[in-house]
Image (cartoon, rainbow, N blue to C red):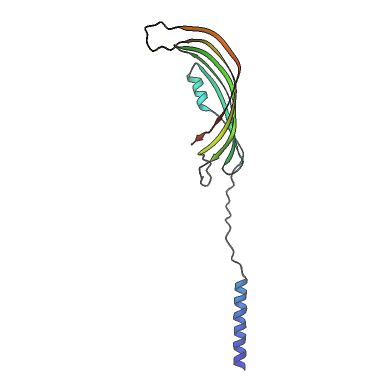
Length: 172
């Protein structure tokens, strides 16, 4: 009887040990370093239009652009600008000036590594412009030089012109 009681108590201790081990949950290690993505407004200036303004005496332009991250890869984007062009060439002389506004969305295709904010994106922009043009002079195009070139000096101004367009930009 003592031997059977000993076996029973040993089996009870083993069962209690197995039950206690089966009730414990596996704990997963939580990384204490967490990277937080920045969401917010980014604003910039178009350097190409500023460089062209300094180099080309017939051109004057300025553009401000910006975007706002609303999700991990989705941005709301917009551009606003003003351009003037006074073209004096052999065949045509005109003056054009106007302002434009573009708004749309961008989707970043690039999967960034930690601490990177690079963009390879495509998107869509709806643009609207208000401009005026002053046609000073133009020549008729001719294939040969046998006939004289006719020059029309019109000096006609077109004001209040508007344009609407859709762009699909892809930039990297």
